[in-house]
Image (tube, rainbow, N blue to C red; front, side):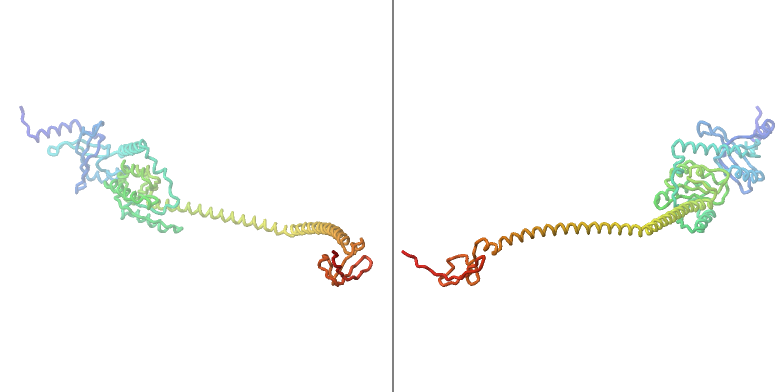
Length: 415
């Protein structure tokens, strides 16, 4: 049996591969490792997982030479909005090589961003479908936006230019609205996006009553850094957050999952500030409209009242004349009634006086004397009791015709 050295065996394998596998192939795989050395060469590891789990069924090393990588990477990231990083699925054009020392590897010549875009879109759809099945997909969108969103909790990087633009736009709004803005710092690109944004949301939630809205903004940076906003945990947290969430993370091509669940999605941090200002404008315009309507209503009411008062003023003379006429008629009627009542009363009184006068006349001494009665006087006083007389008293007896004087004599009682 022929004995071969390891080098000779590897050389045979290389020769066999070069004879049988000499073309380039488009290969679907997932990146599990991406490393760039000082020379600009990129070394990757391709893997394929079992469709029924995460078990690896294939693995291969790959190389992207510096001259290819410096063109391929920006092209891929610009087209997909996704960093060329582990965890994404790619469709690459490769050639197969075998080196006696380094073994089997794939050399990458080209990449198809459309394949990765489809996979990313599929992942986004799966997250959104899961949120919909859980009944939380549109919860944040259904929250009412406050009429005056002045207390703003901002999640952003403190050094981000977009945050500065956002503050400047709010502070220099044309109508001078006041906004109270508080920053909750977070990492807005890279692997730490999900963790730090979730932490910021937790801190805001602990002070919920102090804010009206949450604004998540990211200014500048590559679109390839947006993958951190396409996670289930972050999307679920924002979808269920009890305050309206506004996103302005600085990209126009595609919505991230976070954009899809937020209450309002705008393109940039400046647009987020303009949205809040516009909301204040709406409230102010409504107030101005109501004030104008109130002023118009008051003016109309005053005009109507002035017209009514003027009509009443013009009616006063006629009403007064009619009232005076009625009063004169009533007074005349009362005067007539009084006269008639007084006349009747006087007639009654006069008749009664006549009766009394007749009675008095009938009871007068002259009448009594004329009837045959007499009146005995002593010292000008009427004598009513004979025992009051004494012997020698001089009496005057008045008759109807004349008078008689007499002296009292007491006769002794005979035995």
